[in-house]
Image: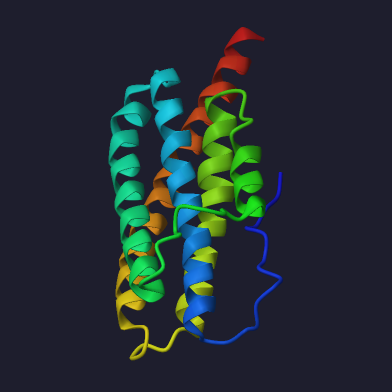
Length: 174
């Protein structure tokens, strides 16, 4: 599984509106696909502690996607093609995570690989953004970063607990 979001190779490293909207669109697509991915796993998940938090993460991811989509539309006005021509590398990256066979793999992929990669993309964007010229993006991303950090920490805690249960069960059975 790829460990990072694939880089954009066809744009210059500058602060142009087109560059900003392209980066934000990649994050929007990732957040949108994560909502679908998490929604599918919600049905399959049994442990109450995990199942009870999934809707919150799903809702927050939907808010992230909505904020990103809105910002992209603002940057690209009057263009309205935000929901066309998605980056195939981003779709492939999320599709790879969707191959998880069980809850442990899903948590490891989502909270240990995908969300950290997305968080890194947000942080890189924030490092390069002009806080005055791109203030709406900076504002939105700072809030998204806080949510994603909390998601990752929670996911790691749940993953550790599940792995601990597996170790305990194996020892009891031996």
